[in-house]
Image (cartoon, rainbow, N blue to C red):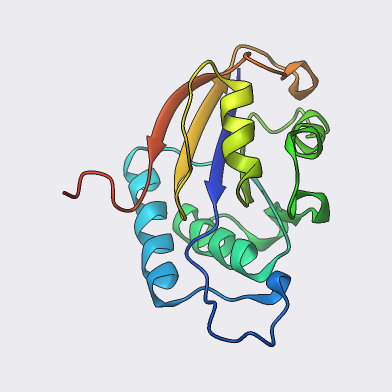
Length: 165
């Protein structure tokens, strides 16, 4: 069985309009939410064997917060440029190309791609993955290449403001 943990980057800072979108950092809320969400997964004993992240600053910074909580060594954090601003097809290729030695992988990226991918991979419909939201999808396969539309089972959807009214 394969397990995919998808994480949308934490809230980013729009304060410096001279920065390229790729280089936007996390804002104060993002720096607060990322470790909190990572800790929620630690408490649920959900941790990957590998992290694959967009290299955009806000995504890789979010991934590093989760890696610290999961106690994952830096060499198990891979960046993949094709995740940045990616449509479903590009994200699915990243997943299908994963090394089968890793049964649990965390993918850090952006919207709308991640929300679209979540809905494509499962029979669920979620309108939007908020910033720093996490989904866990399980697949009944031992080969990442087998993953395609409607083959996954959504087992967790969580986000910073869940449970808050």
